[in-house]
Amino acid sequence: GEDVEQSLFLSVREGDSSVINCTYTDSSSTYLYWYKQEPGAGLQLLTYIFSNMDMKQDQRLTVLLNKKDKHLSLRIADTQTGDSAIYFCALASNTGKLIFGQGTTLQVKP
Amino acid sequence: DAGITQSPRHKVTETGTPVTLRCHQTENHRYMYWYRQDPGHGLRLIHYSYGVKDTDKGEVSDGYSVSRSKTEDFLLTLESATSSQTSVYFCAIEGPGELFFGEGSRLTVL
Image 1 (cartoon, rainbow over the protein chains, first blue to last red):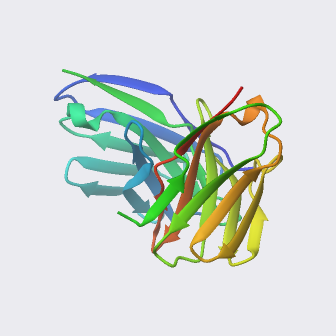
Image 2: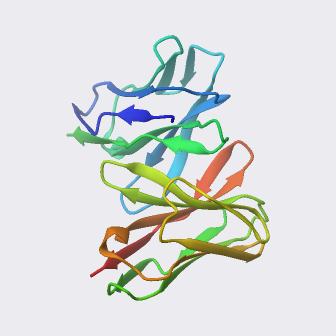
């Protein structure tokens, strides 16, 4: 079946760039998603990329998609303490339902 | 806000007792989902509904049942709770192009 993998933890200094990576085994997903979960809250859609795109930029966020290597990444420029959260990549399985990675906890140090 | 509420937000119960979690939406969306979130596993789909009285299993449905008698309410029932069902449970509704999540229900089974 489909599998989505993320590293569990990333620590950066405030002002640095953060890169969160995601790999997947298979996807028929038209869109690939990044969700953000702040402490004690549910997930919120952060950004997404259409499957026929290589890159999407949205203010401080850059999403890169390498379909050949089945690799998705989220880059956050000028990372702030408010960016501390858990970030999930998600894509649609062959049943059409979203599959989530394990989540990457981003810690931003002042 | 996407108009989705979960109750209760926190519950502590004992092994073998029944537990029902409620998800209520005000958006009139057709699809509703129940996920559980556990460290190292991300979000895993338990059950989902595609309309009143129409439900189907997700990847971790054993030990759970659901009901949807009204568009706005989706109930998740643990008939006989076990310690392995200690988790944070999230309800989600499917809007245009994304899932909207509730705030989560933290369940502890002693």
